Length: 380
Image (cartoon, rainbow, N blue to C red; front, top):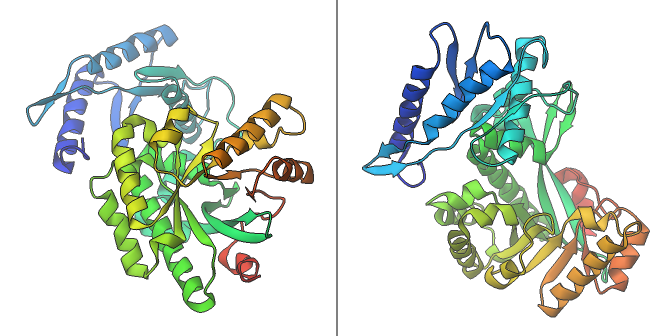
């Protein structure tokens, strides 16, 4: 709604949703907005899960009737995660964490789904409420840092490019991966401020390297579906090049299959504009999603990355090995750069080289490092 209408209409939509919820939540219970489009409902003194399920079905019925926004009928869907005290957790913080985990599972099952949290929280469940505070835009520069992982041309042993990777640090859990931060940011509506911070920091660092050291490697940046959905996306991207005096030819954007499938026509249009500007486009994690050959025909791409799940099974699984071999051949026949990800040993590297591979990315040749540590490699 924010994208297609306005932020005021988005707020109106939320108020209409709340009005329907309030009619269903008994006065003795609690309804709260956690942020963005997330709500929490506290139900007390219920008999069993059957009672909760009946209540959940009433909530889901709120999606059956449209919401009128600007004379348009808008249909909404809901994903619901449920955690029961004391089965799921014994404190309010861990109960919320369990509910967030269940919510994530519900989203993976499709629209209008609900999931009860089953199991025990482990260290792999990052405290959502704690991390949410670290995601606020005013502390972005202090909460996160960037790493850079080299992509090698294995024929010349030179660095083709460096992928920009987001990292976070939290006292109890240590380094937090890009995937975890992005997933959490999407759930609480902070993804756009974070991607803006990433792009500003990356462009600033890259411009500094180009000016002082005249490095030849390209910078690889990940695009999210939320960025592509923005009406001013293309103009916003151009501001980075103007602000930091970078050449579009020195930048490659990576997109995943899942980020373009929701609106393929719009994605193709945006990516064509980036190509016309001079940027390079790569399809990331190829093989992990829909992997439609049609995407290779429709998308204006310069290459694709083979998902690490296939590369890391090369020496143990003949099917994975044949998939990697076929994708290398396919890319070469289409005159596309093919970059296998997750190369961690010599067997994998030799297999890729033997089957026509020219580029690789992985811990064998280069781990993600900060700007200071990656610079000597770029200069060599």
